[in-house]
Length: 112
Image (cartoon, rainbow, N blue to C red; front, side, top):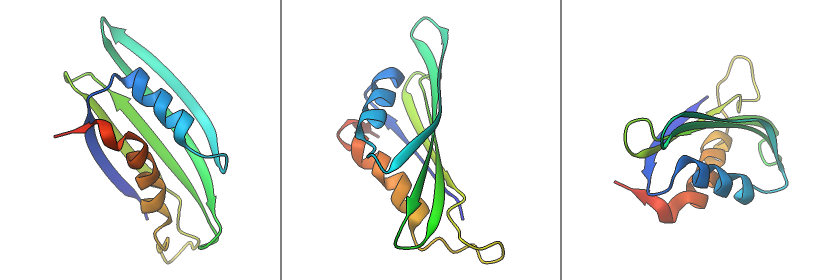
């Protein structure tokens, strides 16, 4: 089961990426990181994390994409692979919990 969530921030993509990297705990493994500058004051960054959830016995991945290509910094959170079964796509809330952890880190900077 995947969870996709999007929101805007009052930070630059670089600032938001730094906060996320500093805020996710030791039980979360950074798999991939990149930042691409697209022109003056335009950038897009991607972080890919993996975390094991003991309560559900599931390994989950989270893709975080942060860019300001449309004039405002936008964050997209996509959690994947959090179901422990090939046939039953039940993750017992692991995907939502993983995505929510990033939203909590950035909460004070979220704008409408």
